[in-house]
Amino acid sequence: MQDQVTNKRDTDNIYNYIIVYLYMNYKAIILSLFASLCIGLHIFSIKYIQLKREYSSKIIGLVFASFSLWVLSRIFLFWSFQYTNGSTFVHLFLTSSILVSIYLDRVILNKPIVDPWVYFGIGLILLGYFIIIYKFY
Image 1 (tube, one colour):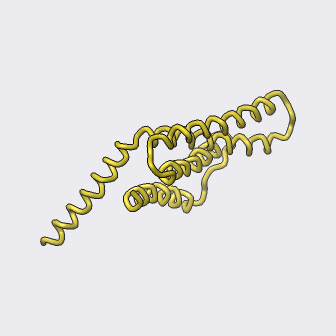
Image 2: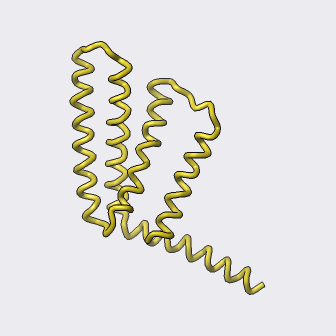
Image 3: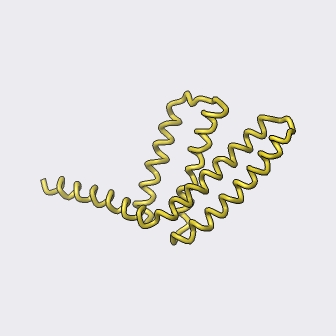
């Protein structure tokens, strides 16, 4: 019985630790997520430019917008490093750009995700965020 109570306390401590740590670094998280959004849009725009091979003013504008997103992502990264001690924490949230790319593929390119393993992988990514934050920090 005592082991069950101890395990319950340990679980509560894990959740409390993660919530407190995330709250303490909320500025780094927000800026990292903005950088991730910019990177996801940048990567998707490169693929979109590759698919639309005609050279028009729209494509040229998209090339400049893509480059601007890349520069903007670096600015957000620089700002986010000011609010955390390690680069791993910021880099952890940069992987969210994968989710941005998946969403844009589904919405704009109409490429549905038919393999359920992709959703399983997304779930593992989200679970990995919490494991890394708890074990690394």
